[in-house]
Length: 279
Image (cartoon, rainbow, N blue to C red; front, side):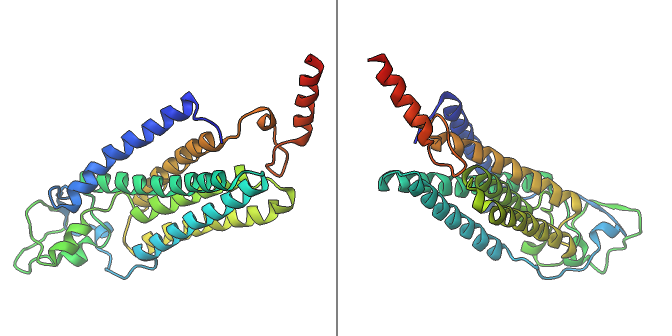
């Protein structure tokens, strides 16, 4: 495993600082110190008048899939590191780096998404359904309502005020981007190309399904899903860049790699001959 380069060190610092900054809104929100920004609505607005339905993909299911992805990355990295002939301690370390980075950036992406939710205060498509406007209030279509006219459950209404961006899309985008890039850079054996592509396509398809379900379930607007996906994918790409820097091999034998991702024996032989010729 390589010593972290200057670029790698800078990326690690950026990741840590960014995580600390985006975690502040999450902490304040969970503590109830920071409420979602309250904004009014137009009477008769069809975009927030859709019915309230159950989630097709629950948040718990998303977390389960995410942790499953972390385990898969750890196993694959351990297998690849073993094929490269690394010692057991190095194998364990590289597995922890790859899997740990995925877990870290998913948490960072969720924190960033949650912070934006509190700041934006956008209304979910089912807002009016859970708001349960007071029957004594006359809502004339086209009027903009700023006063509190909701009589529904306070916690549900609070959640309905945090539509943009989508947390599900953020997690799915982050997981898919990281693992797809991870497999592309790690699994290089020609005999594994087809299975690798199948898994990559499956990941992207699964992520798109999750994102689509958020719109179909009236939990988010399309813009919410796109925003969450972009944020998540950005964290995934950035995290994989740091991972690659941290786990790049060094030394003469690491100067080139064959299609299996192993150190090139031919390059090692050339280096040895060069050293002999200098004696």
